[in-house]
Amino acid sequence: MIFSVLTIFPDLFDSPLRDGIVGKAIGERKISVDLVNIRQFATDRHATTDDRPYGGGEGMVMKPEPLVRALQQVRTTARPSARVVLLSPQGRLLRQDIAEELVDPSGQLILICGRYEGVDERFRRHVDDEISIGDYVLTGGELAALVIIDAVTRLIPGVLGCRASAENDSFCGNLLKHPQYTRPRVFEGQNVPDVLLSGDHHKIGEHRFLAAVRQTLQRRPQLLAGRQFSAPETALLQR
Ligand code: ADE
Image: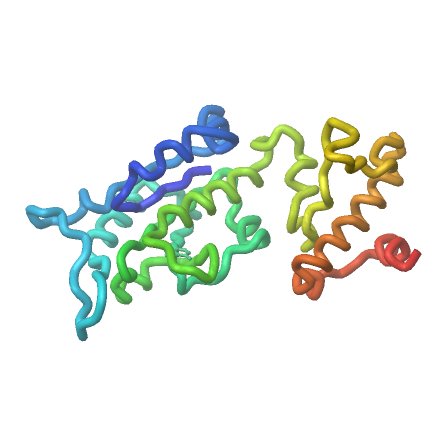
């Protein structure tokens, strides 16, 4: 999958794209990240990409022309199915189902990082989608683009060593992940639940499902509102 990122701060992407699973996915050519510096598409001497807002007010607004030119350049070589996403606090909230929707292993995602107080409204017609990573305001869309690259990359088949690790995740099926334990068996006087040492995989599965439901109920009950339980799950919950 190709991610093309339009930004005025390409250096912000250096380390996050080098390390960890995303870095490995790049090394293995499962994804590539193409950084496009919007400043190179400004036409004045100072490479200006922002200006004061019409009507007055605080801050600066990203000019539409350098953004459109940068996007046109990316589109000349883009895959036909390429999707253009603007990162902004006005977008639809990113959730696991949206990350799943964005996965396109042989396709391309063009991510546009806004800065300052936002982008000129007339640029919006050039984007297919607008996404926010949460109800707070960042100084720009770069961190949001990295969040999307990370959340989408780990869902590309073959990126995580074990396919089960993406399926058995927090938010898989709208449940938070069950609590996890590793060695030692006793830590600060707390034991690992006996069932996890039993070797009985059916029982362990049931225990984890119930622990995930309990965890979700305690921490994010609203996630359960959209969750349908299967007949065996319902039977287990009623036991
Ligand atoms: N740019 C600024 N704040 C943002 C947010 N919450 N999500 C996506 N892009 C942003």
